[in-house]
Length: 127
Image (tube, rainbow, N blue to C red; front, side):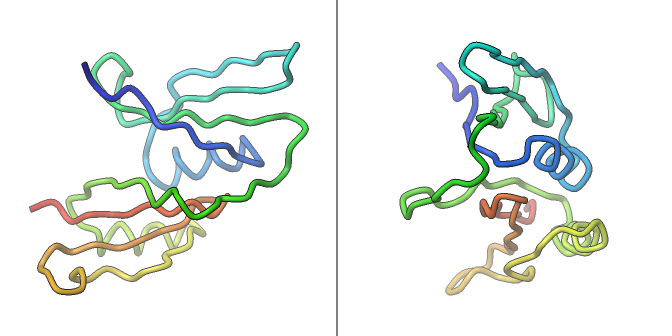
């Protein structure tokens, strides 16, 4: 068994795909439209689905915003250099919501960014 994907609902599919591919460096792996039920699924990730966990972006054609609730926390991505990554993300128009640095009470270095829908993504410095 393995974890296949995490699904998040997005209000603007093209804006979200641009963020995950251009800002975070993922690839759009596949996309499918369902005309009858009016939604599009797009899968993004750092590698092929057969070997990697990916993100499913679900775009419901008739919905333009979502309530995040308070149960979901964040996605986490390991980076070789979170300081450089945050600079690049800001230069590309991304939002860094927590600047890089050690986690409170520990030594692991982290940062947080927001995607176009406001989902939090934790960047963790590779050890």
